[in-house]
Amino acid sequence: MLLENYELEIFNSKCNPGAMLVHCFAHLAQDVSAALPYLNTILGGFEYTPDPPSVTFKVQGKLITVHGRKIAVNALKDEEEARKIIEWLKREINDAWDRREQIEPSYKAAPRPKLIEILKLLPKTNCKACGEPTCMVFAARLTEGAKGSQSCPELKPEARRALDNYLGQFHFPD
Image (cartoon, rainbow, N blue to C red; front, side):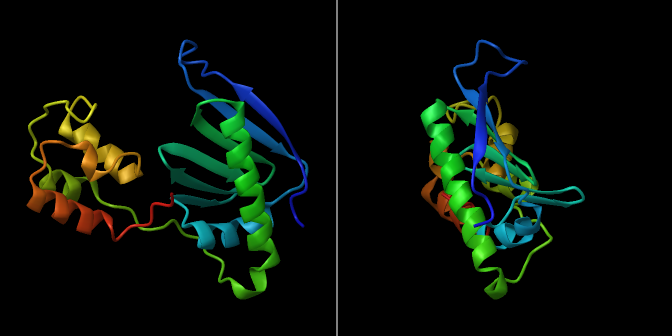
């Protein structure tokens, strides 16, 4: 087992102290840098930085970055959700490390959808029904995996299918 324990730090955003969501750092007792290329392969990292090594994932609207000695997670409801995510990552890190002989390490980010391609498929009404101020911002949220086509009530069925087909080419883990 590579990662045995960590210390969890929960905090509110310094930029927005009144925010309802919290963030966390898991300070790792062991250095997991060597496992990151394998974890990147398994989970399809959104960003991979080789030096110093880190891999970032966008999962259900949360940004999760795993560094050698720290994991950072944003937009959490509470400490319980933070612990669930960190425990899941601990299992994934250890599994990737245990199976590294069978995994081809990846030192690149997974391909991402292109903002302009998404925007072409949207109605461009800026109606705000999706909860975003403009279709451009909504398209950006789609590229992150934070929103899906169902969040746009203005999309016609044919356009929704086209958007879902386009986004289906990219890996957004649940």
